[in-house]
Length: 313
Image (cartoon, rainbow, N blue to C red; front, top):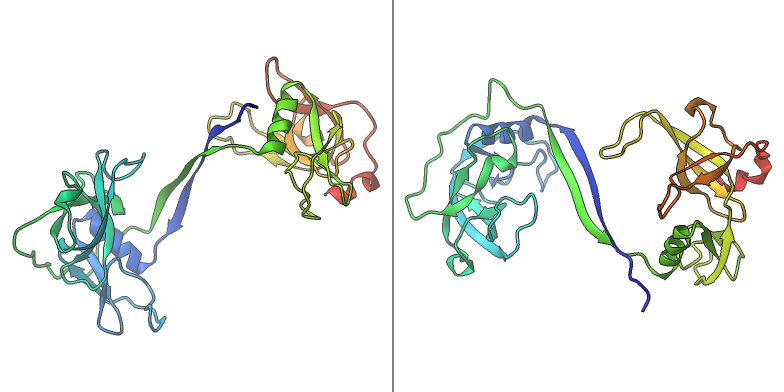
């Protein structure tokens, strides 16, 4: 059996957004240990609040405080919490309709097990010790058997309201290439670059995809290309990426390898960044023991004529 390739990958970035008056009041309220909803045109109180009426689409700003106690409307047990979730131990995801609200809020419920959770159970907010103005200011919900808590009637006006938030976005996943890309990766380990030729249009695609993106037919004929190629277009990178040991500025380019009908992307080295240009002829540089080229450098050949690569831009 051939080796099945796989690799853990992470896509991560900070998402920055500004807040309108309703969301600003809601998140600022969480920072101050109170929950605000908004009154809709049909008389319902919506929690979490929205800025536009879901029925009429009109802007709404009639804020109203609701209680930190409520009722579970539905739930699901989480046996294996993931990184970044509200609780490290198994917990329940619950929809809670807070007292005074007509819609439900999604959050975690700290309970000893699924047998301790049921629709209709009473719960209350457990506030985080440190609060910054985010949904995580609610650490979780917890079971509650006391009397409903009356809200204080806050107006939604604050001295230092939040104007924006930064929310980290992250996706962890395991990637496993198919047959075509596995062959491509194995060839790179031997310092060879292979593509696949479409049996219909006869174009050679690198990296291969197992099918022609133009004709939609399967590809299987391997074709070795390169190793030299032509820079078709490029960009100058001025922002240093996390965990990437490359000093800025540097150039990332699309390179049409000789014999290929699709440009791949790679870093350009061995030349000042401001001397990289379209048509520059380049070749791969392999680090010892590496499974792919570290970068491409100029070959010293004359630049390629524009007509030879214009269809690959």
